[in-house]
Amino acid sequence: MNVSMFKIFTIYHRPACIPKDEGYSPLLVGNSVFLTKNKDGCNSEEDLHKNFSNSFYVDDSCPDNLSSKNRSINEMSGIYWIWKKLESFPEAEFIGITHYRRFFIFDESLPLPSKTWLPNSTCYEFNTLDEASRYIDSSLVDYYFKIGYDCLAPKMYDARLLDPERRPNVSSCEERFYEIANFDPDLYKLMEKLVLERDRSYLFELQELRRIPRHYTFNMFIMKRGIFESYCSFIFPILNKIDEANKETEDPTKRRGPGYLSEFLTSIFLSHELRVNNLKIKELNTCYIRD
Image: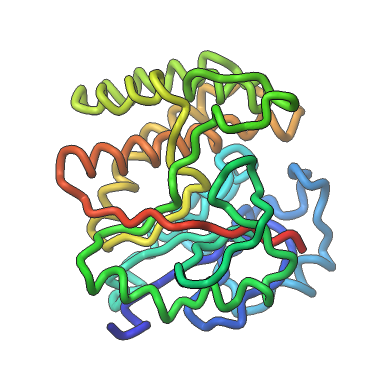
């Protein structure tokens, strides 16, 4: 399978190393609000001009964009841009999302580091991007689709595996959402309401999130183009309404409540496609780059 059939976007919101692997396309999110305060502090004009060259796509380069909402919906402003610019990539039969610090581990034969980013998770820590380069080699992606998979996703994580000495036990994804940063509890309930208004057949997936605090993480995936379009059609009408309902706050972390909920929405969509449409998902380990 030709690498041109893939378009794997790597999401950036701050300066960081770029993979030397040509299979990854860097995408700067929140470009229209780049100089405003974010969860890591403030960027500068120097950061923008020094670190983000013409090799970067930017999430406000089309009239219909959500770049200004990046501080609340996180990487989803970039995913929205990809959806709206999809006609610009007619050769891409598969659309992928990774992050500047998180990538899929495609080579399952390599020994894994001993340390994980979350306790007992399958997101493994590497010191540098170069150290992880063999693991994230994009030339290995086509193997999974050749053998019949429709979508690559991170392995699910169960919040009950979190260190109980550092964080309280949680019994549902709703509790996990509250526990992350004392987010507005009404936002989670609104998410459930909006999902069911769209299609009652998602009730099973919502019940599963209430039964077990386990879901697909990071809003990372590589999926067939048509599935990606269905995913975006599902998630953005819901996410936009959640964002509109989000209470104004100066706390940059709490502003990101809708972005955290988008991970649950991604998980709901993938789990529903697996159950209803027999979507063939390959779950992979992921890596976290410390530097």
